[in-house]
Image (cartoon, rainbow, N blue to C red; front, side, top):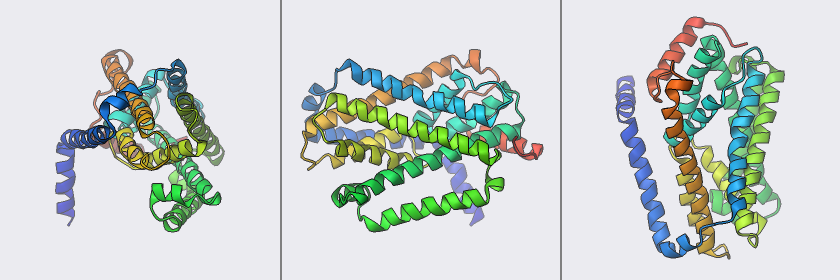
Length: 328
């Protein structure tokens, strides 16, 4: 069984890029079919051109790197601040290439550029990632629960099918997971409880602000659409973001979101055009960021191998094991 697992892992590692591209092509094909069904020309004619739409996108875009810069300053108080190049590179890798590939790259960068021990770099990035994931999960549970509290079962059903079972499961996972992390925090986290709480608060603020700017983007273009509709799409996006190791989750969200626009009582063409524009803007922004940070890598990160391969993780893990010390 173990040999079989190793063979599968080796196959996936060798063909990681091919699998990633095949997945992306499949998602794009599904989106193209849905656009064709809606009427591609009509959708393209409804794309937003309001300047405030793009201004709000920029505000929402910079929230993430600013919050992470603050979070890593809390985690590594004695080190210098995390560089903007590294934070933007981390974001681009996570968004375009593969989930968590940017975190692995950032840990290697922090070790070299901030002169941290391998254990410090590894635990610091891991702590921020876990706490950020908890913040996103709690925010998602709150969003889904808000529909249940208001008795809007139909909207919940659009997100998770049956209402009671999945919702109860999500709440239990959030409660049990949070309790387990608090109880076993010394084994899970390298930062102290006080610092961890501060990092968690920063990530909660990041999630809230990012989604606020996204709702404002939507409302600027289609002000007549009810707030509950935007809340539904935010909830769907948060649920999709919880999927691990999925490349191009923005495109996955677009597929799901375009499907649930049917029968919502609003103009499907305008709504689809807005979702397409928002998703494409994020994809173009993240892809441009990935290209730019790759070109600038020799200047800003010459000591790091500039590809998100598994050898980064193996090298970091082996160095962390040799260090044998928890992060400070």
